[in-house]
Length: 284
Image 1: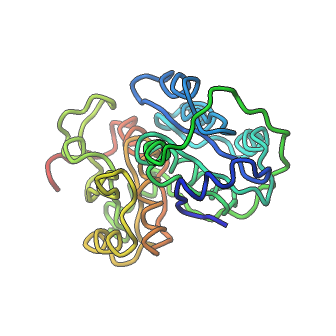
Image 2: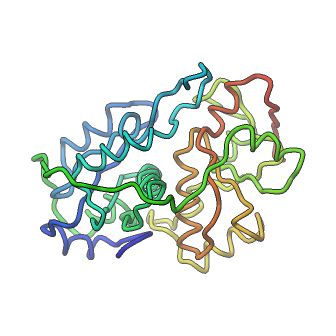
């Protein structure tokens, strides 16, 4: 079972394995159709397309009329039906990839763990690593027989906006923001209506989890990188702009052997949807 990362050579040996499902998670936050367009041009044989905006996210407005962020979690029942439609069973090995260092594939990795499926891994280095091995791409679409995935106990935890708000005064948990440093400081914000960060949050840009070739750093390097941020991952909360790249930090923590951190799914986009919530700017 592969539960964090998988390399291109290993994946290439399982393209015809009926018990493996490959999902292409390519996406562009500013150009919603770019991911599928790239998939149509060429993808790993057997891969199916997973849309970050629709398949991996839910409704932006809750039943109470409140804004839940740009990429809220999908409903569990609906998400399991989506997974079944991709042919996923309880014993299926799932592999997710993108062309962005895992920033979108990690979201699918986390979501599968959210519904209790442990056998999911991200292709380390993504499509770049695949093509660096001179491995082929195809253009025809895969159609799978629907699977019978069960919902099992979640392997991950989440926190709400109210819990994050209460934590500002309690300071019992460390909030870690995965966005680029300039957006964390409140500079150059082009996606969300308000710039800045949650008061007390620390910054760990998700791309700092990667080496120059787009692969994840090794466990020892990642463990050393996260050490200054918190001592106990079970008392850490990961967030970002909309709950997507925070999953990259969560994956990096698993690679480092530091499991247990929670995700704030709504993240910054939900946080600033309520003007009563406090905002900090600058480096701290």
